[in-house]
Structure formats: C-alpha cells, structure tokens
Image 1 (cartoon, rainbow, N blue to C red):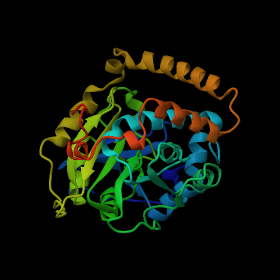
Image 2 (image 1 turned 135 degrees about the vertical axis):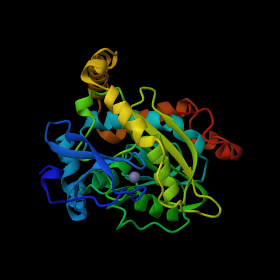
Image 3 (image 1 turned 45 degrees about the vertical axis):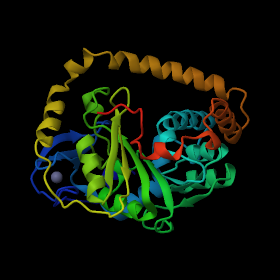
Image 4 (image 1 turned 120 degrees about the horizontal axis):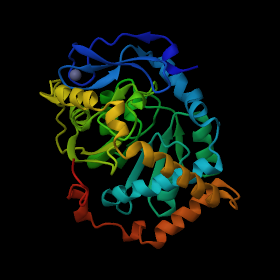
Length: 351
Ligand SMILES: [Zn+2]
C-alpha cells in the first residue's frame, strides 16, 4: 500500500525552524498520485503536509519499501552490482574521512554493499537497516554485522563511532533533526557524519518528478546544514553531485555540542521558490538532461547485464568490485593520514 494512502496528520510546525507559515508548492508525486508538498516561508524547508503517522512509516519501511521499488524481497544480482558501483563512487568522497581502526556505521545500509566493500578493504564497518529482507540478506549471505531496525531500536553505544553515513535516508525520516541528534550521541567527539540527500534545487529531473511519496522532506544545502546544527553538529563541508541532483553535508561532533535554536533562514524560501518557478517543462526540455539520462541508463543497464552474466552470487560480485578498488590503492592500511581528517574533506567541490 502506498505510504500516503495510509493515515496522515497535518504538520503544525516546521521541523527546522518551528515556523507555521507554509506555501503549497506541489499537489502530486512523480507517479501522478495526490501528494501535498509545502515550503516553510521562514526557512525554506520543503516537506509533505500532511505527513504519514510514525507507525505507518515504520511498517512501510520494514515490510514494503524495497519490494515496492525493486519488486524484490532480496536484491537481485543486477541490483547488487549497481549498488556495489554506487558504493564505489561514494568511497571517493568517504576516503578523506576514513582511517584504519575507525568505527564506521552505515545507517540505512540496504543490501549491505557499502559495508561489505569497506570491510573487504579492511575497515571496521557495520550497518543498520530497517527492512527485514535486505538486512537479513546482508547479515546472512554477505556475512556483515547489521542490526535490523530503525533509530528507535538501534543499539549503539554513546560516543562509540568515528563515522556515520546516511545515504538517502534523512529525507525519509519523520523527524530528521531528532534522528541526527541521536546519531550525534553515537559519535565520539570529533567524529563525522556524512549525509547525502536529493537536492530540491535539482534541475536534472523533470519538474513533475521532483516530489516522491516516500520523501517526507526535500532539502537544499541550507536546510540540510541547519538540520545538523539543530542537532548540535557543526558543518565541516557541503557539496553537490556533479549533476546537481544530490547534496552532501559533512558534519562533526564538536568538543562542546551546541544545539542551534530553531530560527528562520532569511532568504532561503525565496531562493528555493525561485528555483522551482524557473524549472518548468519548457526550460527542462531545453537542457541536455532529458536526453542524456535515458542514454546513460541504457548504457548502465548494458554494463550491468554484462557484469552479472557469468556471476554466481552477489557476494562474489562485491568481492570483485572490492578487489578492483583495493588494486587502486584504496585500502585501510594506505588510507589518508590523521592530519587529513581535520582538513574538511579536502579536494571536494564546494556549493
Ligand atoms: Zn521552517
């Protein structure tokens, strides 16, 4: 059952600034189903209003989400290969944050591909995944340490982790600031949190594809950074993917955590509204994105089909990817020196 046909509750206050003045910016999701999306006039956070109730959200992710989107209870070989290649891309910007012996946790670890590859490369990595089928697959078939469940049930020691990654998770959460606050408790002082979410200012998708029923929040760089500050984290770096479709923020747990009070972000709502207003079907059709994406997808599918043709299982596929990464020198023993860890994710393009 789709998430927004379950019981929902009107949103009274903005998650980030606690404001209550919202403007509707969307009435449908990317499938054409009813989905009311609003922007907070005071800080520019974009979110679904009304919002599904917490029990409905938990049930959806535990049982339905991966099936609804991948038509499978457990990842197929092609999905494992694709996720392995995505993990490889993520390692490019995770590397400046990694060092031997550091404890890493990937929240929303899915099929466990990133955790598995990190462990093959010699890192102390584990995962947390709310979907039962995917979590059991990664634990039982890939043999990696994965807790099954969400934030409420996660058993992680306070001040026990050096790095937490949150790839395409924060936009799904009922209360992302609260979740980031929980993660801040798991981190050691100086520990890092890397969050990647879709960019609400993205121009690489059709305007009608912007809103998604499972994305309760739609961040831009300012609102993502502010969500972390509200949770007591400091912002070390912020950058976008090459096509502008995703934004990443690297946070650090400071010596003396200082939670920012709820406050407006002047000018941010006007900025987001202007991006949405200018991104029309006509303006999008005049860019290269609608023509390049199908070609890229076709080429990717062909590469995936070739890669899995003679593969026997997902674990072997991921071992092959990890070996290729290791051969390029991206192993724990050869990771960046300690001094790099405080350099703000050096070499990353700012936005
Ligand atoms: Zn707000």
